[in-house]
Amino acid sequence: MELNEDANVDTSQVEDRRGAGGGGRGMPIPLPSGKGGWIGLVVALLVALTGGGLGLNAVTDDGGGGDNTALEQKCSTDNALDQLDCRNTLYVNSIQAYWQTALPEAFGKAYQPSDTVLFSNAVSTGCGSADSGVGPFYCPADDHVYIDLTFYEVLAQQLGASGEFAQPYVLAHEYGHHVQDLLGTEAQVRRQQQRDPDNANELSVRMELQADCYAGAWAKNAVGTTDASGQKIFTSITQQDIQEGLDTAASIGDDTIQKKTGGRIDESSFTHGTSAQRQRWFGKGYESGDPKSCDTFSGSI
Image 1 (cartoon, rainbow, N blue to C red):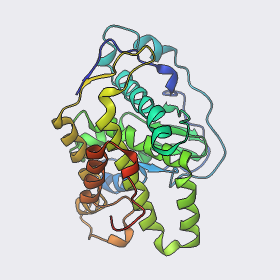
Image 2 (cartoon, rainbow, N blue to C red; image 1 turned 120 degrees about the vertical axis):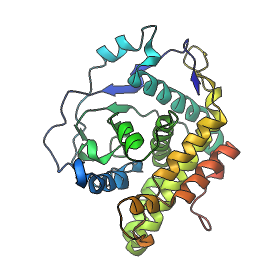
Image 3 (tube, helix red, strand yellow; image 1 turned 45 degrees about the vertical axis):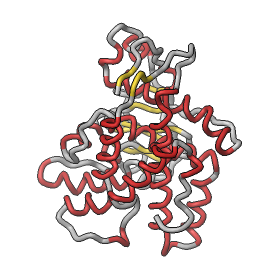
């Protein structure tokens, strides 16, 4: 994977709230360290990569805007792409540039941009207060993606997903939930879960796998995305990068996480899908390059 050094990093698509604190509202979910860390990690990853901020307290508090001054300055330098936050901002730019075209082409609906909020330790959102332990998530109440970039350390060090492409995969998955929100899928699934709680987990799995598939569709088309001036954002994405995306999908499957915690495999508790399912649907999106191929709600998964 190679980013174009001439591409403009559009920091207006990111709100930098790092160091601002998250307010005291709601009950954050901690990610403990040491021997108990895996328990926290399970909690984190059951919420990470989900849409709707599951596990957050439903309070109406958007946390306010961030101060992007430092980020803007950093991402306008010659070595901007050496910086983790600037690279992730450019990933966001690519993902949103893709959906700006793909959503109306595939579904006949205009794309509405969503900011990504960078935070540290804790943050207040339209879905409630959260700390870093919940991992990255999309909040449909305020249409924002939230991430503490230290999550990538957890992903690499504790789950073995150390490839660089794990990062845009995570973000593309979260923006897949934003697309579901725009299309009404998220609201429809939540209503179905309320009407049929016995099948709530299966519906959650199907929604998560669709977000994986949407991430794959973006990956197939990422090299064609451009910044506002028409400069390509990526100069290349290799098969090795796609394999890293597949490896990341496998590392956060429900069955894999349950095995790593030493517990038994309990399919009834799955909320995101097995490693094989997550790989399959990311792969399907990538192979087709068409988000219309991502119908996880019909037939078997």
